[in-house]
Amino acid sequence: MERSQCYIGAPNGAVLCVDRVWRDQFIGRLYHSYSSEALRVEGMQLLFELERFYDAINFPYPATNQRTFQHVKRNIRSKEGKEKKMSEDELLSKHGDLGTFIIRVQHRQNSSWQGRITWMDKNETIHFRSIWEMIKLIASALDTVSEQEGYGEESWTQEQGEQITG
Image 1 (tube, rainbow, N blue to C red):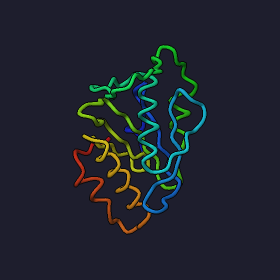
Image 2: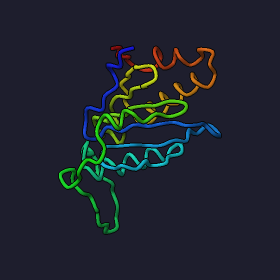
Image 3: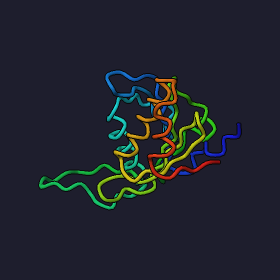
Image 4: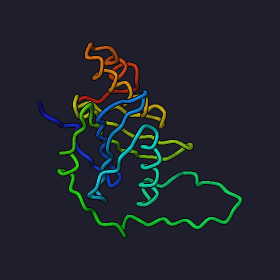
């Protein structure tokens, strides 16, 4: 099978490797090209790690900044100061036991994220309009894998936004 949807294509592209599900939360590893080490993630921790990563490389730039009444020093480094430590081929060689997803956030607007997620095992890409929708897509894919009956597959391909096939 040709894997036409399996590419990183952006400086902020990340690969999520899900190894298991426990108490309705996925457990796995997150990879990006600016680190040679995997970040261990459990459930919603994925969102915090990705947000830190996007802030560190300053891409995609957030449409709104965090508001506070206290003086806070922001330690944001631009992507020019970061050097890539892992090639796209190395990133694409990472795989999870239950599923592997390429996350490409294109915008951080309306206090959420918009972008594309590719389920590498099925070579399918779907656009998402919010963080919540992205998490639902991952959960739907993992339900499909864990049940092995085809249940949930419709929710990945038909109920959730527009599918891109390659």
